[in-house]
Image 1 (cartoon, rainbow, N blue to C red):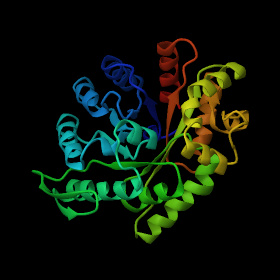
Image 2: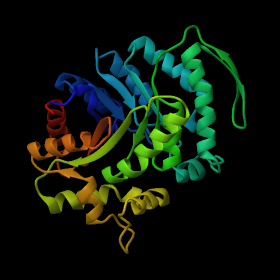
Image 3: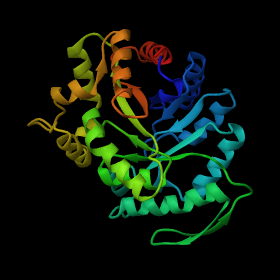
Length: 312
């Protein structure tokens, strides 16, 4: 049996009602953590979690991620305070830079130094959480703030390339990898985290790995579903570079290859899906947070995957 705390479930909220219902169903199924995926102009995960916290008792509420630059770090802190009051010790705050296209084309932010800005964001948020007070002046933020009491909320950082994995290991409570093949996590992510943690004099924090899942025994259907629903990532240059670095460059039409899906995608019978997820956990990562790619019936397939995860 797998330690329950090492397995979560990542989902894109279809509506606030779906998010609240999903969190309740995941808790009833016995899952340890849910991870809400938030688009830069999508439904706000922390607001929905405030409602879900009132309907649940123990399940941990993770964000994968809240796009950090859409709100000031002190604004983020005000939301953390609410969640910690409603669900003490249950929030796992994942933040990240989000996508350049969204930040530039939608928000029209300066996105020339995203990792430097994220570092400063952490330099505001982490001391405030740890001590209840922060005073700093940097290139992006200048703050002088106190809160009534420190909070122990873990802050995790989304990571795709080695520098982001290093930042997560140096400063944060862990790294959230998205769509990274297991071989890439072993050869790029983990070494970068180990080196950065050692240089900072800390123990390496957890590496939490995403696994896309299709609940189907039909390989052709599973692959077609994945190629369609992951096309957005293939069109993003930084994901394309990561796939290439992992040994799986895009095909001549800019699409995801079968070779990438052979390594990345989890599909099959319930037993086969469970076995593949156990293999992911045995590959060196500390936790996994699978998400579902829907073939036909979202609710039925979601319930089936929740059962598989709960029974690992």
